[in-house]
Length: 312
Length: 312
Image (cartoon, one colour):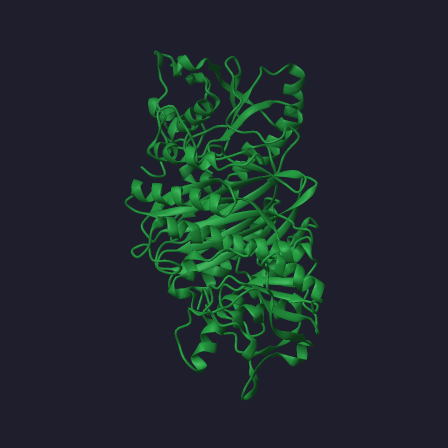
């Protein structure tokens, strides 16, 4: 879900601010995590369930004329599992609401459905059902994924505190060259981190490192200092010079996790490494007055929340 | 959800048949009810959660140029709660995936969001979050609702047996004159029925009594004899003669419940009446060989599955 808050609101965030208060006013006690995070969590039947929803639209998030329907279906599931990963939740199933472009094409329906079935197996999250419609317009795939809370409960964007380390689970930038379709959501990594008691706040990088980090800071009520030299830039970034950093900060659809955590001891670092999980520290959370600062070779500058604004 | 099966498959159902087997093959044990019913149910965190999704599209399910955005939002939530009612589940929250027509209109976003907030309170189901996008195309609202299993567990379309009574919770037909926007999902009625141990199978009438009944019969593996004279025809039906029955059978969007149950004793009937719940018996389930039969003043005829085919 992209309901979100940030320090310098994007168009999307500014709109949401106006309605979130009203929506939250209707929440009973059973709502443990609500709008404004990657997932929500609500009490059910003696436990809790984690839920998230993300909508993909042809021409915005994918191009049906340039890729296989199965690839699109996989991405629609994977972006939701990335949100569950941000909550350190274990995926338990998903539903799909689809709008097919008119006139209805049985071959497209079948290719997408079988694509979801394949993705469900590959990503270990069963398809529980769906609803299909036909209308004049682009293909729309609205996936909602459910998860069970992990060993640390439901992580959210709230929980980062001054002095904590900001880390990434992997390199960012350049996903448009293909990785935005083929990425593996960091579900296993999030589970490993939670088993070792590491994350205090998490968020996945979907709209861009800078924009999403600004949202995490706003939700947690903290500032941050990011060390530009430590940001892991993905080899997919094909720019040179300063443009490389700009891609890493603003491209988005990396689907790595932003993790707020206490400094790791060697034992935890080694245990995580043994499970194939590496945290790359890129900054330190600060008191809110410090704002969002990027520390580069030329000194400090404000970290502008560049990235993808869904409503911009 | 409208994944479904029926005796003489609609276009939608025929498509689904081809992919459901593949999708079900990927299901682990924790999936208690899967595609092909109004809701799915899956194990989570020591209990179970019930989930359903329904997508509404401008020009198909509503006309944004002819009604208030808040009315549209209420319907988008209510149709999902009707599916939860069919499972006798207790609503616990919902998420919304929305696609707004480009260019983005803040007033529309706000009106829909506040409409969902109002509907959440009126229908006692909190809004847990959402995802909003903008694209060239009609307004799309994809709602996914979560519920907790009721006192009889998760009811589905399966469970009707020969000899059981087929009842409706209220009159059908003519919803297009306004009721399709303002109906109250039969959540309270379903809970009352479940508390008294009545329903063996349930389904809500969304696509039309005849079409939806054919799906319930197919899922349960039974036939049915429906007494035309006993079908409660809603006063909203403005036709005369035989056309009245055709409207009752085929109009759809009634959102009353089809209930399969053993004959009620007087004590149960009175207890339900005291809670404001009336079941109107309209037929009897039969062995599958009997097929679907409508018994009218002129004798018997096959009950054709008339109604709304989403992919037709």
